[in-house]
Length: 330
Image (cartoon, rainbow, N blue to C red; front, side, top):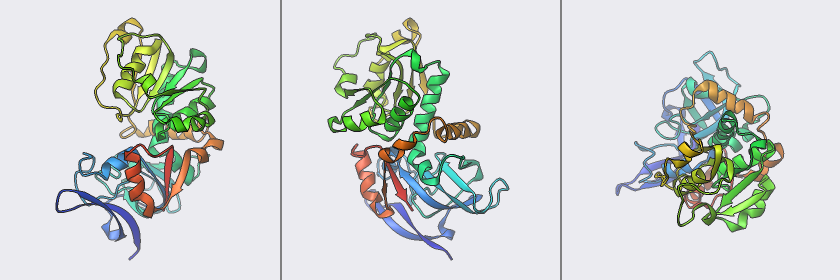
């Protein structure tokens, strides 16, 4: 029987959880149509939350976290996939209620599997992962709202995180004038390398008093932060602008008013990368493999770790100590 390594989150007797590297067999994997030999996974904020006792992500232990994986099919009972196919699996219940990507093997439902598009290799797919997918979907939604490079400046909040870094690079690559906000003064050069024309501090986008309507500054906003930052962004959107929101690291409540919507006609666009329909999912991945691909910057955004380094990295991402993307080589 094939044995392999996995990082598991296990509940202890005092209702705490521990992260441990375990040896599993294929019989330990949950049911599914497609068995994948995992080559790469990646670390997301949601994975960090899944490793916490009070993260409200995992309902049943033990669990193999990892909401992303890329690898090669070793067995499939679904005719859409054959041995040797290169595939991507992200989101759905992966790493939450179904063993995820932090293991050398994964067995998943065929409905979750995306064929690796031409133009990407497995490592590049995980440099993107859910964060890059979310950033790509955010950019596409701004395009669909009519926001073009000619429309004006686009603000990206939380810009040194996974979604933010990817969004800055993609937008700059497409010719947008990008302003990036971050709470990390040491990362200004990094953001400029990604293509940001101007850097704002966290305080700049979280003023002590948020006006219902402020000076019109942004044609569009990519916001993985939420909370007061999103309220400020809405109050400073230009007429007809749009904000694509995908995260809540700044809080779930928005201290905003209806004025930006009814006086400036702005749009608040929700970004869901978890249950995004498969047709849309494939469209985004194809864009990530083509015109949204920032080839010379992928290695700048990402660094590689081993499965043994995962527990420490999961702690770091919860403390906002991770820049860009961390890729797990299995």
